[in-house]
Amino acid sequence: MCLKLNNCIFFNLCRFGETLFLFLAVFLFFPCFANSAENEDETEQENAVFAPVQVLETISAQPQMKNALWSVSVKDTDTGKTVLEKNPYMNLVPASALKLFVTAAALDILGPEKRFNTEFYYSGRIHDGILAGNLLIRGGGDPSLGSEFLKSAEPLEKTFARWLEEIRKKGILKIEGSVIADSSLFESHQPGSWAWEDIGNYYAAAPSALTIRDNLYRIYFDAGRKIGDPAVFLRTDPVLSGMVFESLVTTAEKGSGDNVFIYSFPGIEKAVARGTLPLGSKNFSVKGALPDPSLAAAKEFTAFLRENGMPVSSDPLNGLLEKKKYKMLSTVQGVPVRDIVRVTNKRSFNLYAEILLRQLAAAKGILPASGDAGIDILKAFIQKLGTDISELKLIDACGLSRRNLVKTDTFSSILAAVSKKKYFNDYLSSLVFPGDPEAFGHIRRFGRDIPPECLHIKSGSLNGVRSYAGYLKTKEGKLLSFSFILNNYSGTASKLDSYHEQLLKSLYESSL
Image (tube, rainbow, N blue to C red):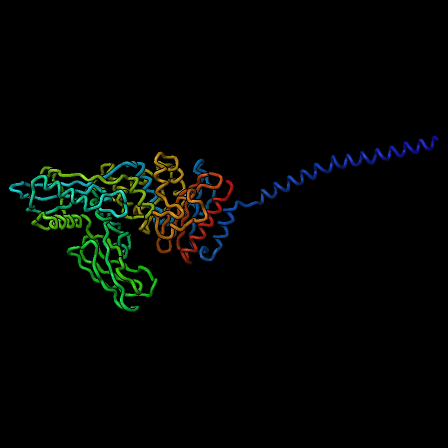
């Protein structure tokens, strides 16, 4: 009995030992297992690379990028902190992305509702229906007179008709004098660093205080019968009296596009057209820059008066308003600054950027308003936003000069600061979104994988230069300001666009 008892006790003790061992094993082992899993998660988190960084590194290794100068700066607009960067303090040529500076300054200093006026005067005595004196058009730096791009602008013919009505109200039936154009508000010459092949083309038009029809004209050609044949010069629109044209344009293969450049010089009424247009083209138009916009306005109004039964005895000319001699007949109010900013950014229109630059100087009472004075005011605005300008080099406002040098960090900082301004909605809506019907060129197709309400962008391009800057709202709702500038690249522009689209898509998808 006792043995049995001892055996039972021994057996029970053994069972108890096994249970205790299992309990201790579970108690000691599983915490270690849990800690091990936590450590693995932490290690994975430490080893995980922010997805846009991977995309950045992959793009950097591409053959087209290896020997280029590439700068990237992305900031969280709420905090101002950098989210992603690569060479953010490198000074690079920004091309047309530079327009973001002057458009922000115009909204800030001039205000979205500001309008510029064109004034209409007469001088001399009226006797028996004859004005023994002159008519004078004084430009106030309004780019909307006869503009085809500012949709809210009054048609030029309607403006001219209203001026003619004012003349007739004074009992004037004939003008023994001239139509004079006064563009003295601006110093309107283009920067010396603009390329010679650009100056005669519409995108390099002089920023006159008396702008008419966006300071451009069109030449129309028909292609020759075969490749290499001379193109046939047809006409200009509008008719440019006194302008002499020489055409050296020839015919190239179908689909070759517009490769015509117009060579002319401000104030000189002679132009040479060179280059090629595609085989089979009819009424092919090329846009040139008016050599003297204010004189062109005086000429066009003189022709309008004569065609509508109001004789003008003398030729039109440029001149100055002498207020003691002249009486005002009419004032034409231009469109709001917000509309000018919208076209400047969406169409990347150089002329409007340069006009806004000079309006900054005019608003401070610096007359005649020059580009240099405008740049000083623009730099002061940028500095006031809290951005370092010690190495900022600005030659113009539109980005056509290759002597402009800007950091991507400067762009992203300015954009982040502007996002907090009361005019931000006007600024944001002036930028291009994917599929934007108001945009043109490659940027209209850019970023199609991102919802249109999440990407607002301004691009820039010169030979060897590609730039992109603007705002991106991520999937999580964070608003980022970004700037990418690429100089001295090789490869196709479309391939480089795709790289930057990939980078933006990775930022849009990422968790910040």
